Every structure is written in C-alpha cells, then in structure tokens.
Amino acid sequence: MYTVLSGGVGASRFLQGLVQVVPPRDVTVISNTGDDVEMFGLYVAPDVDIVTYALAGAVNPATGWGLAGDTLAVVGALRRFGYPDWFNLGDIDLATCLHRTRLLREGMPYHAVTAEIAAAWNVEVRITPMTNERVTTRIFSADGEIPFQEYMVRLRGEADVRQISFDGIESAKPAPGVLQAISDAGVVIFAPSNPFVSVGPILAVPGISEALASTRAKKVGVSPIIAGDVVKGPAARMLRSLGHEVSALAVAKIYAASLDAFVIDEQDRALKPSIEALGLECYVCDTMMTSDQRKAELAADTLAAAGVRP
Image (tube, rainbow, N blue to C red; front, top):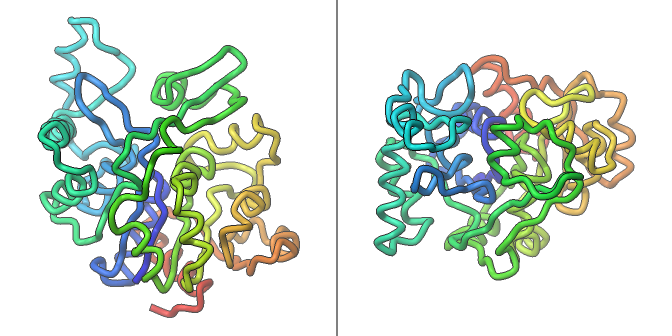
C-alpha cells in the first residue's frame, strides 16, 4: 500500500506517474484542503479536484489545473453581477463544485463526498481530504492578511509572505481512514508540493504527525525545489520571504523529523552530503516531470528510495 500526502499540480503529476508503476487501487491520497474556498456560492476544493481530474486523465495539460477543453460561459455571465473577474472556474468544473456543495449541505461527510466524486470520474485511487472539518490557510504579508486564493490566483503568489496560519486546525481531526492509510502503508510519500501550504496543513492536523512517527512505513519526500527554483507555484518565494534559503536542502530541513529519505534532482547532487547529515537517506535522480514517461520514472525512483522495486 502506498500513501501520498498531496498538494495540487506537482503532486497530481507525480501521481500520474505513480499509477503507471503500481496498481491504482493500492494508492491512497491524503489531500490538502487548507485552500478550499467558497466561490460563486459554491464549495471549491482546488487540490482535491486537481488530483481527481489528473488521475481521470481529464486535467488541462497546459495549466495542470482545470479541465481540458472546458469553457467559461457561466463565470463570464456571473461577472455582470459583480463576481470576481480573477478566479476562473470552468463550466464542467462548476458542475463538480455544484454537486459537492449540494452533498455537503445535505450532510454527507466531506470524505464521502470526495470518494463519490472520484468514483464518478472513474478514479480508482482512493482520494481523501486530510480532515472533514473546515481548515483555512491564512496568508499574511507586510500589508496584512491576504485571502489565500487571492494570494495564489489574483496576485500569482508574488506577495512576500511573513506568516502562515491554519484557522480551525486545533479542532480538526483526521478524516476517517487517514490514520489507517498511514499505519497500513508500506511507503508514505510526501509529493513534490509546497512544504508550507500544501503538505504543511496536512502535517498540522492533530494526530497525523504522530501517526507518521509511529508507522512502520518508509517515509520518502520528493523535493519541489530544483537547482534553487521551483517548477510551478510560489514555494521558492515563500522559502525566501520566510527566512529560508531556496534549495532542496531547505525543504529537507523542514521535513527532516518526518522522513526517512529524500529525493532530489541530479542538478542538486552537491547537496547530498548535507541532506545525509540531517539523518536522511538521499536519493539523486532526474525529478523533472516533462512527460508521462518521466513521471513514471520519478515515481519508480521514489519507490526505489524507499527500497521498493515495483
């Protein structure tokens, strides 16, 4: 069994590779929900949906989010009523959010809603939210708080972050099955996601870090930083503005207490001794996911770092 702690685009691409090398039914995804938001009166779950669409083979390959061939008729029409013009949600994507919102309002637990939506998209991987409770990631810059989606979408992650908090985290509980997925796994993988706002909220849910500490699974992280930069997203700028160097080593330091091994790109080979000095095994390979074949090769290399040959 393989359990993956997942953010959005980077994690979804890694998962597309993982299901090429292991049976999809053997994979559980614990998804970040800290960036869930109500938009247009609907419950939008960006990371959950990115992973769902990617594993369904329906994600927009150009962006890594949304749906291939989707249209924007509804949000275009809503703008005449003053709705935000910086947040695009495709028409088919809206249908997913409409369905989720209805089920949640009828009282279905979030993990069950997520499973139903994944099944409707014929996804065999088990996708579960980190918690059924509402947790909201809050971003603070020198100018004050910025709502998370405004930070990510409207500002494109370009504001300097001074502080990050997770509202509701103290009362959150792991969603049903999350702790068992960690306990039963042979390998737990921290996907190549933002360590602060993608994997960070998952680790902050009470009970999850403790489960990771007690599991017999081999715990392997994949660096989202390659040669001092990030392929996509604000992780590099976040690292810098929060006082870290922008490097795979910095990410390894953040995760060191939770992992057994860390996968870095061959361009960062010189960092291997410093990462090993943290008490982590360090595996060096090509981590750029530029094709389906490269995604599968990275997944296989990550499993090899855990001592597993699929």
